[in-house]
Image (cartoon, rainbow, N blue to C red):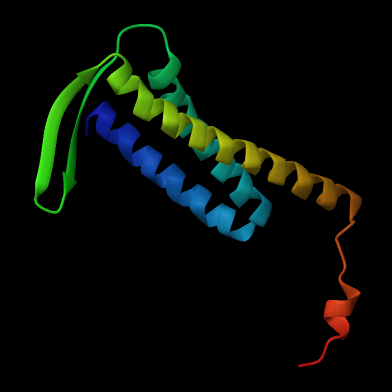
Length: 121
């Protein structure tokens, strides 16, 4: 068994263990989700705003129309910049939600809606 094959298997085992543990601990689900999103944001932000020339290729298809082309410069950076803005916004939302969850877990203060609880169907 080669070294890269062993690392690949170890990665799969670690991922499976994290998935099982995250299923048991809800707060860990949120933390792992934010970390995964941060990893994606790092890649997209690097492509969109990093130093150096970027070249990418892509294909667009809609019904019977199709276009396939190679792009460089701004034509490559603009789609990644839009994706970066969206992912960064969701990441900020996730970090704020984690902060609220952390505060509620530490303080024990959870919102109560007495009118909803008293309501009978």
